[in-house]
Each structure stands twice: as structure tokens, then as C-alpha cells.
Amino acid sequence: MQGSGVLSSLIISVLMLARCALAQDFDKGLEAYNVGEYATAVQEWRPLAERGDARAQTLVGIMYENGRGVPQNDAQAVKWYQLAAEQGYAFARYNLGGMYKNGRGVPQDYTEAVRLYRLSAEQGHALAQTNLGVLYVSGFGVQQDKVLAHMWFNLGAANGNEFGAENRESIAREMTSQEIEKAQALARTCMANEYKNCGY
Image (spheres, one colour):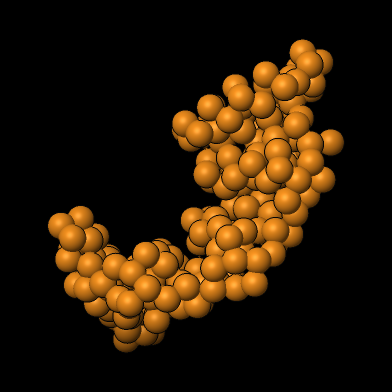
């Protein structure tokens, strides 16, 4: 019995060391990225991404999308975003939504963009919330709706996105006071429900 306790402690120690090593590699990648050494950043993040780290997968996707440290390749960006999005990583869902919205690396699909933005928005991602508002203004992938656009802009603004605030003020100029009150009430309810089942 005592031997199994020692073995368990050893396994826990090995796992903790591995986690520390992964964190160090991730941080080394961030340091390299911050000083413009993009190829080094990708070298640090790719092994983590291949082992399933959603943050690293998203960052490798960003590198491919923008051609930093690797040749620009939208299909590769989509691949890495998809892997992280499948794990529920909000930033990856947001980025993948953008790829679908703009038809980069995948056929343009506003409905899929809305779905991905909504998943990310439900996790409190301010940019996804703001982009949902944009899609409601334009009617791409959803029925055009100023009230829901205002609601999503309001949520994005509440979570720190300055474009959410700017867009909210812009759309408000086209709305009645009753529509604005309705949008504000929907936003309050949405926040109270932790961004789930937002809307009418």
C-alpha cells in the first residue's frame, strides 16, 4: 500500500513538472512574439498545439492567418482555430467565426459565423458580442434587428470593447426610445443569465 502512495506522489510530481514545462514553453513563445521573433514563437507554441493546448492552437492559427513566423495560410489558420474551438476556447471560436464571415480558408458562411460568434459571446467574449451586433445590423446570417444589435453592442461595451460602445451609440440614433429601452432590458436579462438565451 505504501508503495502505491509513493507511486501516486511520483506520478503527480511528473505531471506537475510537465505542466510547468508546458507553461514555460508557452511563456517563451509569448516573450519571442512580443519582441518580434515570430518564427521562435511558432516553434515554442507548435508542440503545445500538437499536444492539444487550445491557447497554443489559437496562437498558431493567428500566426498562419497573419503570416507571422510562417507563410500566410488561411486553411492552416482555420485548422488550428477549429481544433481549439472544438475544445470550447472562446477566442478560437471568435477567430473561426471571423474566417467564416470573411470567407478566408473556408467558404463564406454567415450562418456559421453567427453560430461561432454566439458560442464565444455566451462565454463573455466582448469582440464576439460586438461582431454579433454588426451581423444583426447588416442582416447577414440573421434577420436584421436593431434591438438585438443594440443589445449585443451594449454587452460588448460592458465587457470592455470600445467598438461596442461606438456602435451602440450609432445604432441608437436610428431607434425609438422604446426600442432602446427594450434592448437595454434584454441586455440586463442576458447578463443576469450569464449570456445564455439572449434575445427575445
